[in-house]
Amino acid sequence: MDHHHQRSDSQGQQRFLDLDAEVFGHQLAAVLDMAAVPTAGSIVDLGAGTGAGSRLLRRRYPEATVTCVDNDPQMLEQLRGQGFAVVGADLNDGFPALAALATADTAGVDLVWASSSLHHLTRPARLLSGVRRALAPGGALVVVELAALPRFLKERGEALLEQRCHAAAAAAGWNRHPDWTPDLEAAGFAVTRSEVTATPPVTTAAREYARQWFARFAHLPALAREDRQAVEALRVRFSNGIELEPRATRTVWVATPD
Image 1 (spheres, rainbow, N blue to C red):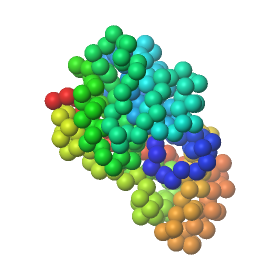
Image 2 (cartoon, one colour; image 1 turned 60 degrees about the vertical axis):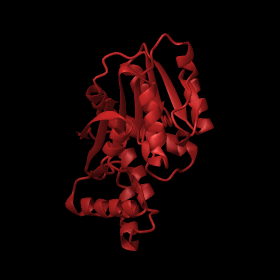
Image 3 (cartoon, one colour; image 1 turned 30 degrees about the vertical axis):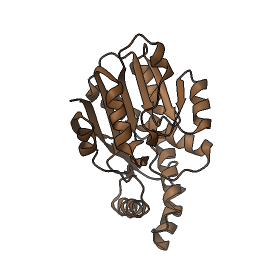
């Protein structure tokens, strides 16, 4: 679902994104409620990655054809194995031609989903104008970004350490994205912007996800040496020796043709 961090090996990256879906997946279900698309025959997931969002979309719209667009051949092969239609494309080149629509009895795409994918583009205007042309009457584009990196720590001293980790991550460019409202409006959309906050339960998956985040923080160049040492000491306690309070806020733009 989310690509704001530096990529590690493919298997580790897939596990990281799958953990996000497991821990915060119900948050994205709430995002779909905001989209107000009751039924859909054709859905496109832009920057589908490991398919966490695609699987959510398929569960919500079991009768729809979900087409996954990504530029990673390995990810596309995995998505194909999960039964999705796949398209390999660079989104900087615009909205791709979809073979599924050429034969489908549909006037266009009912729902386009872009979760933490638009901020990778250098030319978002080309893609957004193509999405608008591809949408069916009553269709919607849903753009989702993390408002801030997920937080996990509850105790004051540990929470302050996490805050410094987030500052170092911001200095490294993690989760950098604009307010997409002006870009969407310029492409001819009417836009509703809102935020959704989730505080999921503390599960084994949540503990693993927290540990993986801090493993990544430990390598941030801007993190002070003493904080790096504190992060390393903290990581061994995530299994059962630290009190967690997972929470994440995502910004949601629901865009419909104006």
